[in-house]
Image (cartoon, rainbow, N blue to C red):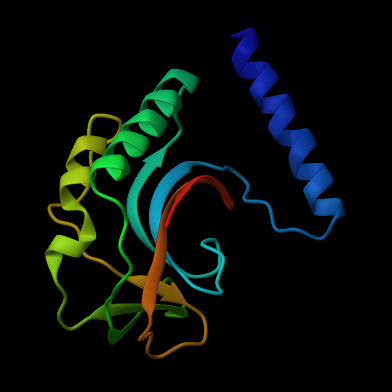
Length: 159
């Protein structure tokens, strides 16, 4: 209980410091993995690979080691998916989501996703790659890398 309270205090202090520097800080940072693009930070433009949510420190350490070992055996290679089908979501239909018409499933590291299911299972039946964007109607460039994220911050980066 003391450890959890300390973590919450640290999060509040970090959020205050970053906010004062003009940086966006999510209200409730959580862990997630993603593919990201050259020239864009993952928090701005990415394709989520796996949402992991809140994790205990032990689980984070296990996931880090799992990712390090995975990418040692199978180094990340840039690949491209064209996101060109637009759908609008949200209560005001103002959230633009782009999905691909076609793509190679092998590039999506689905075997890695299934290994991460140990930490959080998905709420939906299958993975559907998508990109959320405010202003783009097509994204046609390669993914530069793969990252483990905590909120808007990279924890581990593979490229």
